[in-house]
Length: 87
Image (cartoon, helix red, strand yellow):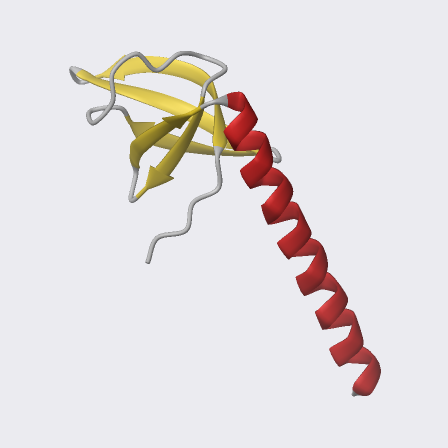
């Protein structure tokens, strides 16, 4: 199973004849090859797996997904806090 967090494209460039994007989530930037997609633009949200951009998402869908991830991260933080209290 593949889990991916939508990342916002902040840069598009070519290197050695290949097209790439730099995409960012919470300050973490990742390089993604754009060989599998057409019409990716700066500001788009993409899903990346093994260094390839697999899907372009609408901003609305990306926000829904990002909100869900934030809820998960918050829940994991709370669980970790409870675990530490028990120890």
